[in-house]
Length: 447
RNA sequence: GUCCGGAUAGUGUAGUGGCCAAUCAUGGGGCCCUGUCGAGGCCUCGACCCGGGUUCAAAUCCCGGCCCGGACGCCA
Image (tube, rainbow, N blue to C red):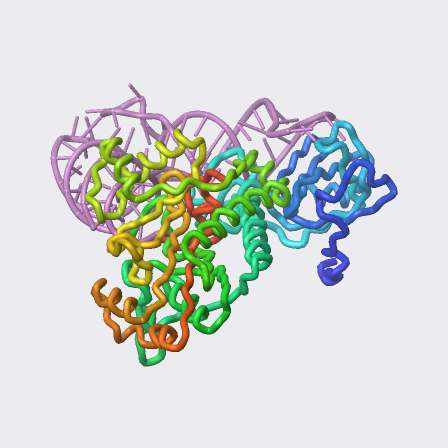
């Protein structure tokens, strides 16, 4: 029998969600998937078959089934791989109004037991246990649903940006020098030299503005070697980055808020099933988002008991106070913080013409969570060089970057948006690790 | 990195010095059961993170280690 295993034994005709009671009793279907649960009542046995799209009940009545078929069913274990071929029988007593009456059940690969975790939702597992057994954790419909939504999110972002004349690019993740300062990088061995994993596509995006690409976007990994250990940080994340020429910070803020609104809207339609699996309905996004000045943010923080020196970055406590205050007064979670002190933002942020201590940088916040940050960039090489030196960085590392500014660099602006944080806030997930298949954090390198 | 908390069967838990040769659920094995959908009933299997110490007695108290969670810092 084993030797007869050929593709017809595991070629499905339908996913479980493609079946309905009305499909017709004469219709013979083949389903493939995992044994989700087994319920043996003696004279009748239920095998729940799970595939990517759902769960269907396979019913065996002892009286009407061959001894061989009953025997196969009784020897199944949970999470084993099976192919079931049979008829779809409308049945009021069955979970979705129909059940499969099998002609054959083939066990393609038996699962060992006990399982490393429960897939049916009867017993919870800690996040750490779930991540250790991620292949199994991801079989749970609610966990899978997050990644179906993530897929639709990426699709929505790509289509929105493509439709707005952005060209998708891919830039190196292995780089020779630290790009922006600020964050710690992972050093790697690159033949006889030291190299780093890139923290952001920032400098490459800018070089492509000089190259005349006009509008670019990249969705790709970024690496941060910070030893932070929180619910909202990862050491490897996915950044949605754009850069646009002949655009100022207000132009790209507009694009950003429209993108956010678009993705919420698209997911409501395209990820309806996955959202209902999670029992979530997405917020309705109303534009424009509030533009809160840095100075106003400090006042709110101060009124809430958290004093911040002008020129310092916001503390976590301040962000919580500000997020709560804005949510109360506007009824919305999203807002921009604008008009930042030049000295807390990266060297490439454009200072305001009339007040050099402020710059044209912005953060997009969701409550106390920073989703995105961006700015109009400096396009003058003299100014840029001065700013690099002021921030205590070495010019030597930036030569190939600075060259792009010498021979025709247009004014430009852009931002980077954290995919995981966006998804996390959309779905109101508690831990950013729930938005990544195989998260990388301070402690976890496998699987 | 700092502070706080935690580690008990495959999974999730109860247990704050002797009543623990350790609770309950889920799960595994076995038996019964023709409508389950968190099926049910009966039987059974399976655990105190590692190393020291205190004590007549340690899952429980102390010290060190390792691992985990949360907050903060840093950072996006």
